[in-house]
Image 1: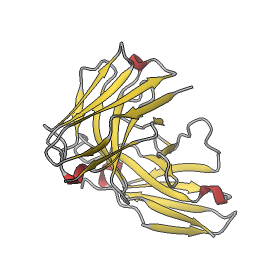
Image 2 (image 1 turned 90 degrees about the horizontal axis):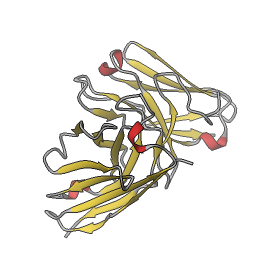
Image 3 (image 1 turned 180 degrees about the vertical axis):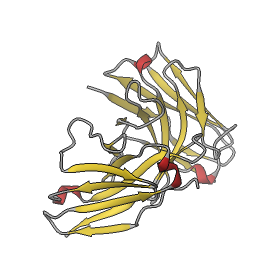
Image 4 (image 1 turned 120 degrees about the vertical axis):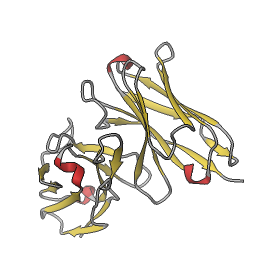
Length: 121
Length: 108
């Protein structure tokens, strides 16, 4: 069974940092591109970052570029999102999401349950 | 344009057919995917590649694209189909992924 489980969220002050983790199981990590998607309260989803199956290509939304870094650890079967210089507008539920093998950048066929991030003083 | 535009809300009577649309210039070049989201849950993929259904999605869900408009059609709508529906594609530059603003489907 495919499973994705986020962790590492919480409350952080503006300007602070957090590292989100996504533990994957039930599929071969190296066969799938992965993404982070977030959703602000009462809003629709917003794509945040992408990493290809090899870990060599990453893309970012303009709103997080140069502040967030996506990475993956094959040995740990984990996807990460390093978030720096956090702002109030980064508040929301963060989801890791898998792309079907061979599909490229999207769609997102499996999602984690989401982890809340709150940026506030 | 770097936007995907959806009607904020649509209503349908139980058992009837409803179409949810997504407008965007990028849809002339890139395919749309559709997600269903119920309160407190993660989004769930219901259509991809404009008209393909993942396993487990009933064939009451279908999709199509014409010009700059992608459509999600639900036939014989059930009470369990009441949810928010989001379209997703690339923006016109092809360099970013975007979501529509969402359509809340009310089943009467």
